[in-house]
Image 1: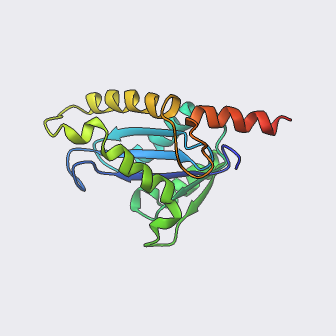
Image 2 (image 1 turned 120 degrees about the horizontal axis):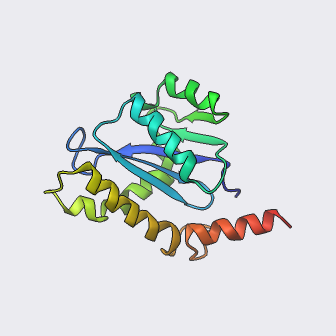
Length: 166
């Protein structure tokens, strides 16, 4: 119940595996604050870039990141996260329920505009659309999930840190 304690991170392919591009996403376990970014493929370099961008964009320090065991989250990424003083937790193979919040977020992003635009050819356009979607998602969208009390992720974050400070 504390922001920054653990983020769940994953990749998904809106047009099918290895087609067009991949979207990296990470969600805070407590507040449901999300950051996403599209890349042409999932690999170690893009994973490192995404993590650097994630650190810049999250409104708090990150202590742990939970991932599945796909190759983009290899031992190289574990070492990279250790250098950043972030613990890397890897789920058991074939247990997506350990990352259920990010898996559920994929379903929400699935209705997002990129999925409905098969003629989309530009990665820059996809990232522009993601930024607009995330602005709405993180700052305006009311969440009905457990413990969210119809708050946006930003409102949940502010409520939680105000309780921590008292």
